[in-house]
Structure formats: C-alpha cells, structure tokens
Image (cartoon, rainbow, N blue to C red):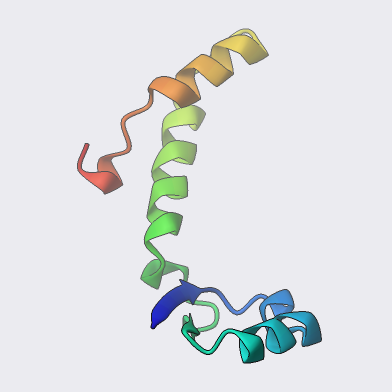
Length: 78
C-alpha cells in the first residue's frame, strides 16, 4: 500500500479522483485536519522562506530569484 498525506482541497475528493482511486486500491489518501496549517510541515517551509524574503531586500526580480534559490530553510534543519 502507498499512502499520500494531503490537504482537504475539494479537488482531492472529486469524481475523477474517486474513480481513479477505486481502480488503484494499493493507493490510500490520508487527509490532514482542516484549517490546521501548523500540522503541515510544508507550511513551515513556506513560512520560513516568506520571512526570509520579507527581510532581504533586492532591487530586481533576478535578485529575488537568486535569494530564493540560495535560502537555507531553518525548518528543514539544513
């Protein structure tokens, strides 16, 4: 069995997804709690990146992209 943890986005429960999952019983979707971004590790990564970018001014879009690419995300322990 393969389990995928995901948010409660409506598209994850669409007819197309439900039909596809019925044909693939080895795949199981595990839904996270609604309105609980603190339970989602990805939200910590985005939060750390947004904080870094908000406090790191650049003059150009190219500079902003370079800042994103070189950022060490503390939430990942890197």
